[in-house]
Amino acid sequence: MAESAQLTAYKRDQLHISLGLDEDDETAPEYARLMPHGVTLQVFPKGMTVPALMNVLARGSRGDIVMAASDDIVFRTPGWDEKVRHAFKMFPDRMLVAYTNDGRDRDKCEHFFVSRAWMQAVGWFMWPGFSHFCADEMVERVGRKAGRTLFLRDVVTEHMHFKYGKADKDETYASKRRIDISAQDQALLIELDPEVHAAAARVTRVIDESRIAA
Image (cartoon, rainbow, N blue to C red):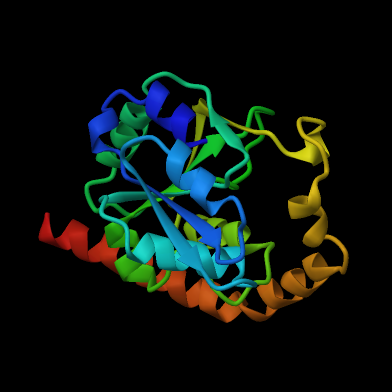
């Protein structure tokens, strides 16, 4: 994932990639040896959920535009970073959820970009309370309620997931599917509907204030 992001980027020197590892990952030394320049490895307590991990990584990131990316995607589009920059330039207030094409040409928010201004307005990057699923869908719901989502159809980050027949169902995938945590996260997403509305209202307020200032 990291190598494909760098190799296809137009301005590689402006990328900062943070990767999260579980503290019990026995291959941590190998990660440290293989990772290209410009990649930071952070170790997290075992059992920390992906949404919580993503939230911490995003808050500690350096860029003005922050992406949620899983380790099983491959960046396929040359100059993808410039296309993302152009998308955000279309919105001077920086209030936008821009999400990529997963290689199946689906208008579905899985791997997405937001600005630092968006995170400040919303108050979080991904809701940390989810066990694994639905965190990206919650971000999409906030964006849609605020009228600020954009499908980057021509930016392909191919999702090499076992459910699409592009990988083996290894222990990493299997561990999240032994119990029905998807149903639990779906129920939580419904419970969080008031927060979705509130977050969208905060985004809308920034949009309105930016228009008045202009």
